Amino acid sequence: MKMNPSHLDRRRFLKFTAAGASAAAIGFPTIIPSRVLGAGAPSKLIQIAQIGCGRIAEGMDLPGVLRHPRIARILAVADFDSNRAGIARRKIEQSYGKSLSQKIEIQTCGDYREAIARPDIDAVMISTPDHWHAQPVVEAALAGKDIYVQKPLSMTVAEGRLVSDVVRAQKRVLQIGSQQRSTAQFHRACELVPAAKRK
View 1: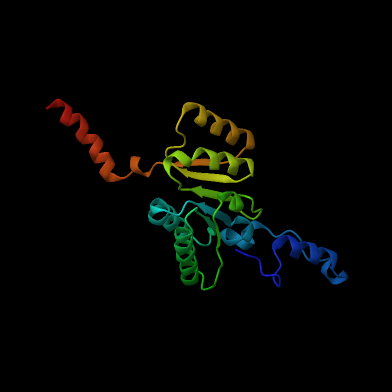
View 2: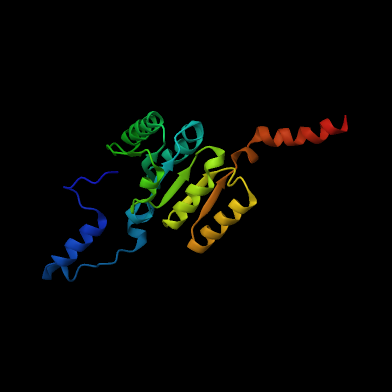
């Protein structure tokens, strides 16, 4: 979400209120217990960049996050194909317009590194082609982002080891999507394979 110069972000707000606090405000509690704001506290909102806006992002990854706008919010989309990025941006903006009743501007990037560099992004979802997963994961981890990536994580053992080492060293959260291992039709297919071998 692009910041409007007329709006303050949380850091600027705290800086200005601390600098301009009056004597009357001294008695006001400065630490608010988490139970007061609950799950909707701004500090608990996960801000996400979507990297890759093709079929998997459109059909699986984006809809999954858009169902939970008060927990996680997509602020940027990145795709080399500007048409795909534009379609994803419009879909997200329309979804938030309905679910949150407000306009949230989504940044589009041709280079995913631009989205990763944003300091307000907490996590990235990577839905790029299979051969292009490991490098964005490593770059996101080095930038301090948590990561959700589609399978396969890597194309070689060495690439996978590098990803694992970097993610662990940076103390990042990494999840690899493996939905095809957990849905009913794939469970049924696995049950049928031994039966077919016996015939």
